[in-house]
Length: 350
View 1 (cartoon, helix red, strand yellow):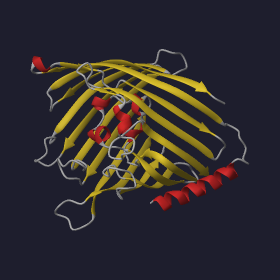
View 2 (view 1 turned 120 degrees about the horizontal axis):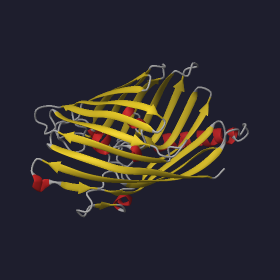
View 3 (view 1 turned 60 degrees about the horizontal axis):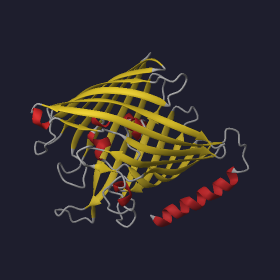
View 4 (view 1 turned 90 degrees about the vertical axis):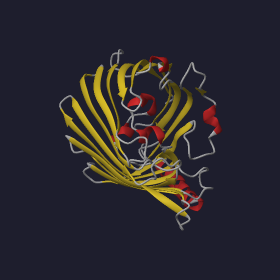
């Protein structure tokens, strides 16, 4: 795998040198600091269990740009998270401790370079595992985590590797192949565990599919004679556009071991949302998740449901977002109410 990545790196450097001779129209570099604050009280059936936390409160930075029509880059750092505060769980520098590991996310979410030549795009670095499902379209700092699927919440999706994608001449369909380190290997490369993904996406006006098949390697179980086993993740993401409405239905099926640590949760997951955007300043949505797993799983027939309102008060800008949502979780038998704000402060370097 190391030789594979070094070969790709040499190719990218050669292509980058060539791209310097290209027209620099549209070149730019921008640094953004993104902060989010959530206030999230939760009410349980037992009043004594009622709690309060800071939800998805966090601080990110994003550095992105384009050096030519062929070369672009993206670096996203997740510096701080605040969870279960003020109960004592402050998850900040804890992120740095996992920097050398691939079985958990750390303060480097994305660190990738993209080279595009005609219909081909080559990507090298740390990126999200190519899984179908439009749920991953949103940046992490924009996600309302209680209403995200267990797949989004639990999978260490940012991994090191490479991807090649081809877009049809009509620019309506894209096919990609990706190889990355596995989220079930403790340390990248040293574990010898990798993930292989194939994805198809499309943009057909009223309909946008995002489908994928991934094989995620993990240590073999005690009942297997192989050196490693694979969890297979099949995801079919579908979006439908009707005037100011967007309907999203993501379905995922995994072959993991139900309840086993270090494996995907076996079964079917459904993530649905209906978005209504009456103007550039308002966005309303209904969202729900449903899991159907084997009977030996505590998550069997788990579901939740929520409603979200988002407001962008700045004219001709989405830098500031105010949001509120309410969510019910049938497993916890609890209601959560969240109010918060997300602000993006950007600096153009060139």
